[in-house]
Image (tube, rainbow, N blue to C red):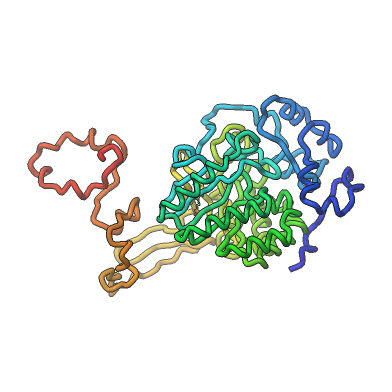
Length: 443
Ligand SMILES: *Cc1c(COP(=O)(O)O)cnc(C)c1O
């Protein structure tokens, strides 16, 4: 692959900067744009943008000269501009928007560590980014230089991971973990690798997109020493794909790091099947696999970026079957209140009987699949995997648990109170109550 297949841009204002400076990530960081005056040296701002930038205590604004150069100044709706330059629409509160819509703080056994799923944890290692996305789901903490995590908090996070053997996959996020210096990041990776039960380390970073100069040989060589290490980048629009990003991804891939992409569905930016198709084609050309397409969270300041959920379904309908299977991301809604990621997809299952399944494909072709009549169910008693010690006393939670053991139902909150009416009837007393999944309030 040649990164020269993609454009490389520099705004006229930066033409006099030496190549050495331009390609130096420290120069890019030092020269980030944040004020009305700084932006207006590069391109004119609208009244709405000026108003937002002049509002005290607005969510932090910083844009690297590299990323600002990708903005087309002639286009007031430029997809890159809208992601990083605030407008007065960001100042609107209410309408069901929340500060911590994913209830992450509620799922944090220690500050900065979110343990939501059984076998993986999310570590918020910093609140700093190279550039700040206006729709940030963690704007409650991100960008605030006074809300960084202390050494003690990091110790507490590591202690929790150490004492929780169920965690086999740790996601480093923030903030942007690659905003750390190489030695600081290495010391963190070393500490995580010292914990035996952590199999996989993942990094979520938008640095390759905002500051591809940061992906130095020193960094990729260091990362390559801590495998298995995976990395997800965050690209929302094909205009973000440049020669510099392609080169950074190539270096990361050659260091043995599998790359994925997580994008957010954003109104007026990428809420279009054609844009999404071009995006996933360019990503896969760079050997980056589309991983998740997120529905925009119900977070303060991001209301104007939200699309109906139906838009996401329509996009997946336009991708699945129409292009390479591995180019299709999973569309997810991160359920408000801490429910976690819920995958949504068009339905391809049309109907079923006791011997046939009716399905449709992406073209609308409706087919039947004849079920086997002589299926011998899997026998856990003779299966070496099922017989493993650690699986014996484990209670499988959730809907999957309903399928695999003899529980009858999962009851919503308050269900038992409402349905106590027949509790004294003799036939009810016979029932084995242990079959009911215990609900929080019953314990
Ligand atoms: C997204 C997320 C993860 C990782 O989820 P995967 O579906 O495994 O990518 C883990 N913890 C939290 C809190 C998350 O939000």
